[in-house]
Image (cartoon, rainbow, N blue to C red; front, side):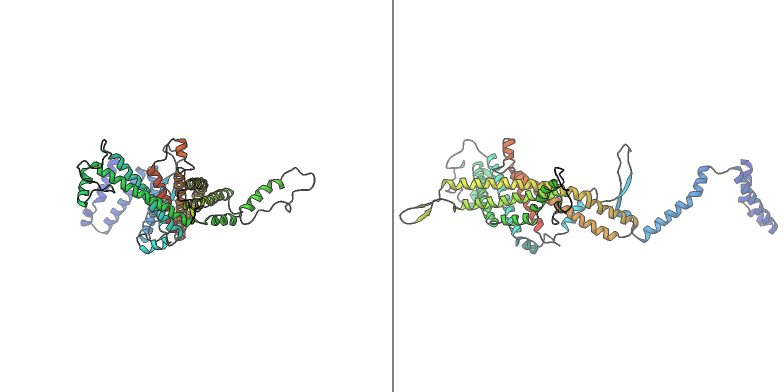
Length: 460
């Protein structure tokens, strides 16, 4: 069979030899032989099932491929906006692939959406607009305050590491005289001494550290003047939340539904009606925010008391023969000021813990609900090729809201870190036996101030 096929194929592949010497009848005979050879070949070797399957399905696949190629050439492919991720494990159990936006597993799009809400930080007018607000100026002063405290700690550490044992006299090791301020006469000799004399270097490190310490204390006092009367603001916020109505409803509702009645029924008319102003707010958020506002209200009140006591206004009045005076060295002034400052730290720490709980749970709820639904909306829009731009804009807005919740949570963490180390709370000293690291303490203050500066920065 194979030999016949080969011979027939050979006679068919060279028809020009017959065509050169024959007429139309010979050509018709050649055509009949060719068709007969093709039919015999098909009968001799039937196609395999896989070849038959490929024969039936190849045109469909190629048509789909051609359609995808034409759509990709005419418009941008949606695959550039989405990616495939594996939802299963490496073992293959429960593994399935789904189409999700590329931003779902990355934090960068959320940060970009949040920062795009604000104006450019490289323009001076935007910083001026931020610092003209009360909170903006206060937090900018707080940045200077904790920067000064960090530099004080840094130069004090340099001074401790450059102590020269056995040198404690009125002159340096090189015999140069020291003036009353602890320096060396002459700028040129000072530069030389800083590089050549360890004792001079240590003294100047200490001098710089003390100057930053005094600047830090002055900035702390200057910030207190901005806070006078801020407790009224927090009380107004608590009143506007309707906390009293909510607590009244929560206390009366179990009594209305209790079975301990001898006559009558607990109908809808006698049951307490929940106030409409608080029904849309979850209980955990209402109570956590209330704890935060109460802590802030107590902090402002005792901080104002500490400021007034430190100014000497509450010192006892003494009299002499000529004029009524205020004793500038009253020993009770410092004790009153410190007691008020300790209670202020306790209240702020309580408010920070309440804010930490509310912000952490709000972020968790937002990521599980709003952010997930926004990403699902974009996924469906891309699959259906309709409403993609609206879904994108909605996702960008939702990611911006998520970024602001992250900023609020970061501020709460920084506040808890700072005030857990302050006098009056001192969790590190109580449970670790030592204060928290000064560098971490200052870093927490800088982060807390930076988050408020972001919130007060002008929107785009």
